[in-house]
Structure formats: C-alpha cells, structure tokens
Image (cartoon, rainbow, N blue to C red; front, side, top):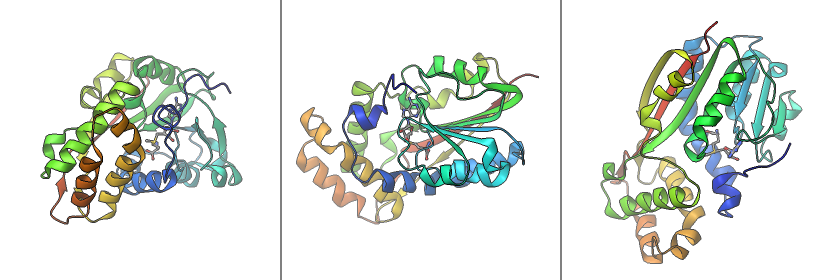
Length: 263
Ligand SMILES: C[S@@+](CC[C@H](N)C(=O)[O-])C[C@H]1O[C@@H](n2cnc3c(N)ncnc32)[C@H](O)[C@@H]1O
C-alpha cells in the first residue's frame, strides 16, 4: 500500500531510538483500560476486528486470542514490530489510515489508540473508519490530553510543554483540544450509543512510567534543542527529575470513547 503520510512523529521527525521499548511501556500503561472497554462491549469469538496503528501489537494479540487470529487485521505505517502477529495468522498490513484504500470492511470492532491525536486529518479519518464498520459495529478511540500544569516539578513541566509544542508545530498533533471533546466527534460522524471515560496516566518518578516519559523526551531531544524550544540543560534537569520518586506527573489524561454504527 502507498505511504501518503508516514508515521508523523517517527519518520517526519527522524526519530527511532528505543522505539520498541517505548511502545511496550505505552502498552503496559494503557492495555488494562483498553481490554476493560473491549470486555464491556462484549468482543467475542468471530468478531471481525481492525487494530489501526497497531504499534508493538499487544492489543491486536489480545483480539486474536479473543476473536480468533483469522478475524483480526492489524495495520500500521511501520509494521516492523508485528512479525509475531503475522506468524499467528493475524493479517498484518503496512497501511496508512489517512490515504490507503479500506483494509477490509464490515468490521465489528475498530480500535485506535494514541493515533488520531497526531493526524491533522483526524476528522476525515473518522469518516473513513465509520465507513469501514459493519452496521452495529463498534469504534473505540483512545487519545491523550496533556495538561503540563498537573506536574509538580518545573523541569518536567517545561519538558512536557516543549514536547507538546514541537509535535503541534511539526506534526499537527493536538494534545489540548481533541481528546477532551470525545465522544462528540464520533457522534458527529454518525455513531450512536457513545460513552466516554478518562484516566490520568500518572507518572511517579523513578518507575517504569517515568521511563516512558524520559524515553519520549529523549527521542525528540535533538529536535527540541535544534528548534530552540529546550536547552541541553533543560533536558538534563528533566532527566534528573524523572528519576526523583517525589515527581508526580498527572499531565497525561487518556480519554477512551466507544460508539457504534446504527444498524
Ligand atoms: C504512539 S504509537 C501507538 C501504538 C499503539 N496504538 C498503542 O497505543 O500501543 C502510534 C502508532 O501509529 C502508527 N501510525 C502513525 N501514523 C499512521 C498512519 N497514518 N496510519 C497508520 N498507522 C500510523 C505509528 O507507526 C505507531 O505505531
């Protein structure tokens, strides 16, 4: 499939370091909430499932266990971490959700996490996703809202704000006005029975959650310094603060919305 718009904050910003590590930490933090949502809507054997932007693949793997590997399609513009899924019988596609043709249709479940927030065309992508759902099929969208003021260390506050600014300016990511509007965009796209919840993905200094924050910062450090957004000293101060057990960072709030296509 073509690559209209490569991974916005991978290829465009030319960052790669420790990506698998970072994706696995993301999964560890977010998977329990995602699975709880799937249990609530009743994902069952035989459901045709689409995992968009599958990342390191844990959620597509869970869907394969529940629905059957042959019922699951996992897409990403970067499929290098999805070989295990393909070996298990999941259909793995290198696929750009913004531009490529439908990776199938009549899905009973489509799930995206930490993806629409980065895509300037997020509203148009929602319309595409809705057209790929079966009547009665569920769309589950999870995205982050970031409020740096909910951090008790100035160095990490500045670092988070810097990352938000860089991704907004260079990629078009929207960490301040998108996720907190869910599920309204799903309803505007024609879906019904919408529900939404939010969880603060609290970071405590010195724990794996802080390592996730630190990795996210490290992968963008060269760009942050080159753009004049943060200095090397700012980055060093943030690194020290991420190791401090007294650091509390509630800035990353994950919104999870579910809604379904009318029958
Ligand atoms: C922040 S990661 C999240 C991974 C996974 N959804 C999770 O939450 O664990 C975003 C993922 O979306 C993929 N991605 C970025 N742009 C995409 C696009 N236009 N179409 C499909 N996948 C895309 C990236 O390659 C990356 O794997």
